[in-house]
Length: 173
Image (cartoon, rainbow, N blue to C red; front, side, top):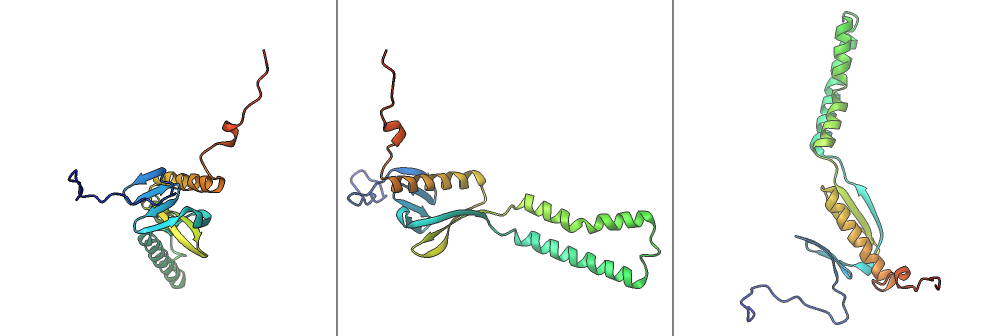
């Protein structure tokens, strides 16, 4: 405990390290020098080949679609082999066609209800790793932009904008 009575430890600083904060939410911190998600922390200079993708679909929705499609296929085969398809009326064919669209409807509802997560992948010291994953598209975009800004700062050596720091030509009056 320090003199003021705070229980939080003071932040360690490394001489020469840049600590400009670009994004901070619980469990996610992006500074000019580091990207920290949960317990994983990466140096920005070590991250290469960043790419964004969508994760896998929800397992429950995929299973529901597969089971429904298998059951409807079985019913269709059973009706075909027993000769029941020749005795159906036009209305029954329409209802059967609508029922066969059930797996597609379940897939669309499942993707709306539980959309696939957004994922940020990158190479860290020669291995491809999942850096960040989020269901919230807005948060994912903010973290991705902050990480890209941090990489630009590391690549170009500072915050100075070359066009803004240039002395533009102005006509003399």
